[in-house]
Structures are given as C-alpha cells and as structure tokens.
Image (cartoon, rainbow, N blue to C red; front, side, top):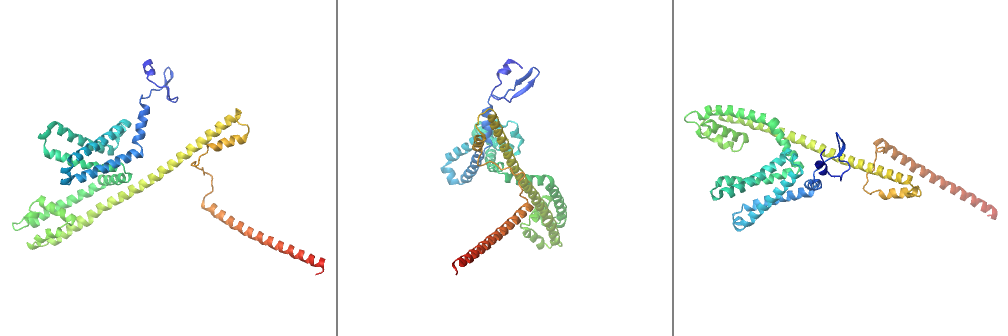
Amino acid sequence: MSEESLQSCTDSDSDDLIIDDEGPVRKCIRPDLHFHRFVVRITESAIFNAVIMVTILLNALSMAVETDSYLKSQYRTTFVVLDELFLGIYTLEFLLKIYAEPIRYFYSSYNLFDFFVLLISYVQIFLLMVAGGGTNLNALRTLRALRTLRTLRTVSFVRGLQVLVTALVDTIRNSVINVVLLLLLLMFLFAIMGYYFFGYKDNGDKEHWGDLGAAMLTLFSFVTVDGWTDLQKPLDELGMTGSRMYTILFIFMGHFIFTNVFIGMIIMNIHDATEAYRVEQVMEREQIVQKKKEYMIQRQHNEVRQMLEKQNRGHYHNFYDMVKEFQSTLRHDDCLVSVDLATNLVWIETYFALLDHQDDTMYRLQQLHFETCNLLAMVMEKKLKQRYGM
C-alpha cells in the first residue's frame, strides 16, 4: 500500500482494518462518509417521505385548478412558479437518492418511473428553450399532459398501493395474457362469422358488420354489454334470422365467461398478494422485537460485565453499591425476556384452579378461626358464671 493511499485513509474508526501482504493496514473509506450517512438517514426518514407525498398532492391540486380557464388566465405566472417549484423539489429528491444509493437506485422499478416522469419534465423545458415558438404545439401539449403522471408517484410511498400494483402486474403478465389471447381469438372467429352473416350481403348492416374492423368493434361492445341493444336493433329491423341467437351466444361466452375469469384471476392474485404482505408485516414486526431484545440483552450483559470489572478493581465498597448503579442503568422501555415464562393455556388453567383452592382454604381457615373464638368465648363465659355463682 503506497504512502499516498495511506494518507487518504482515516484513523477515526478502529474497526476498519484489512489484511494486506505487508500486514494489517487501515481500510480506506470515502472522505464524505459522515455526510453520506446523513443523506441516507434523510432519504430513509418518514419526514422526508411525508414532505414528498405532500408535494405530490399539492402538485396534483395545482394541475386540477389550472384546468379552469379563468383561473389559468388570471394566475398564469403563479402556476408557472408553482410548477417550477415542484420540479425543483422532485429534482432535489432525485439528487439526494442518487447520492445516497448511486447503483441501487436504478434497481427499483418505482425509482425508474420517477426518473422517467422527471425526464419528461426536463425534455419539455429543453424543447421550449431550444425551439422556442417554432416548437410543435402537439408535442408540447402531449408532454404537458404527461405531467399528470406525477400523481402516480404516490404508489412509490404507499406500501399497500405497491402490493396492489404488483399483484395486478403479475396477474397480467402470468395469467391474463392467455385469457386475453383466447378472447381475441374468439372475437376474431365471431367477427368473421358476423361479417358473412350480417355484413356480406348488399342489404346487410354495413356500418357495424361491413368489414373486420367494424365487426371487431361491435363485438367489443358486446363484451362490455354497453349499448348492445342499440347494435342488435338494426339486425332485427333488417330481418337477419338467427342474429339474436348469435348475439346471446357471444355475450354469454365473451362477457359471462371470459370477463368473469379475468376478474376472478385478478381477485385471487390480489388476495394472495395481500396475505403475503400481511405475513411480511408480521415477520418485520417480529424481527424488530427480536433485534430490540438482542440489543437489550447485549447491553445489560455489557453493563454487568463492566460492573463486575469495577468491583474487581475495588471501585465499589459493597454489593449494594454495585446493584444501585445497575439499577440506575435500567430504562422504563426495556423489554422483558420471557423465554421461560409459563404462559401457555394449561399453566393458566392450573394457576386459576390453584387460586380457587387458595380461596377455599382461606374461607375454611376463617370459619375455623370463628369457631375457635366462639368456643373460647363460651368457655370464658362458663368460668365467669362459676366464679361469681351466677
């Protein structure tokens, strides 16, 4: 290891040692380690996430108010300043997260989505600065409309929404694609048949069944059962025989079977994902409690060891002083280690039975004491009568 590299290393942490060919040397750490840890704590804090969440909600409210033509014309400058302010906050968030985790930031799909939304905003600004008034208005209008994607960033901060989105994406990727392909195949077959049944003839319904595209659009309306009676009415007026049987058969297969299968798959996957999320939350809470117990036990062991060392060196006059100092180190929020605590159902039932027996024994002892006192009083009264001749 060269002298220059040794000079760049720090001696602040005694545990940062590595083994080299020339023996143990101190490990080099980044010069901004403390600031990096500070930024990591900020990005992982609940306050930081709450600030970004409030910013997203305010941005959504601003875009909603901006749709009013009167308010937009009266406060145009205010909306521009607010948009730049929100963009600055999103940029600062991106820079902090990139600085905290330069590589792991791009491992998360939600971070990639946030980066995509931020990139769209800067592309719009770049086009305005470079092209100016000659910029294609349709392109700028499209980029401006994509600002609404910022509201979807809420998913990145709400764990429950992430579970639902993940379950929906997994369902579409694994199962729903097959169902959709089967539905499209069914629609293609019925569209061909509908074309030859209702649109092929000169007196047929050319508007709804005149070609494959029109027939597919009509069948899509049948799948959603939205306004299918209006599509069936021209066929009845033209006297198309069997059109009602055709429509009912396709609605039954396309809507009642495939649509319900699609919904059922989504519900099952969301249920499984919710249960897995609940189990994960329970495991996280158990791990937190376990870590707190381990920390508490280790801390108490260290304190007892230090007190024993002080006692061996003669820092305490007696055992009472050592116990008093140990008592001062205890905290009200310390966990109680209940590894051997008998809290099972059999033990509780036995304990209640023992309490019942204890109450019964106490009652019998009270009765015995009462009878003893009564007999003693009767004997005393008899002796007094004999003494005084009563």
